[in-house]
Image (tube, rainbow, N blue to C red):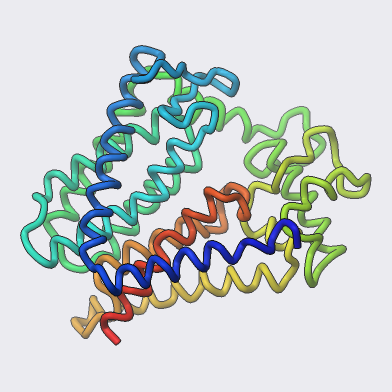
Length: 337
């Protein structure tokens, strides 16, 4: 309970956000400008740090991990790529919402935003963030309503930016390509296969073994870091970590089948309604969601996507990422009654 009792603050945050939006719709526009300002600063600073080896306020490139890591103002917290990738659906969704009200921003600025987001995430060297961001772009092109010309521009900038970035000789490219290929090789490892890399492989195996012994309610939130040290769950000195680095394996081991099903059912429900909206769009029928809502649903889908590594589900900043768009989505759906 000491680890989870105050988790209700995130639900309270979403409710308060919903209440404020119901009483001040203009907040959405202000939020857009705030996020756009933050992103612009991060774009410029990450490129500056990559070239000059320090950022605008003198913070050096992080060199403790594989290759030099661009982190901008986040410093030792290597979350620059994750921050941009996970909040991009929100800012893009607000763009569509404001554009539907009037001629808000030229589409070319939207393309520029996509391009610099790709650059900043690539420079950060965060492989999961790069995967999730590009997965989001693909889903965006597939599921957003109308904007046929914009979709063509997105596809063009998406392909050209990746070709450009992978053709450059920069440290983040070495981490993304060379280190990934090295981790996938199972040599000198007592197994016929390795999931992602040796360390993640052992996290996953250990968390699943913990789940098998604690199927209903798990061992408690944030307790993987403690239980993984027990002999029957510990494979080697690299087995333990603060969390298993996969959302659903963490939920299985720490909250059991009940916690896992709660989140997984939410994920499947969102996927179902998104596909239903797409089918209605193809058939020319009345749609369930507008583009703001589609972007917010895509936000949850990439955040809860099961086939990738992830941060600690109960971590403060990750939880903020999960709950930040909830109030906006409920507000938007509520306006339609």
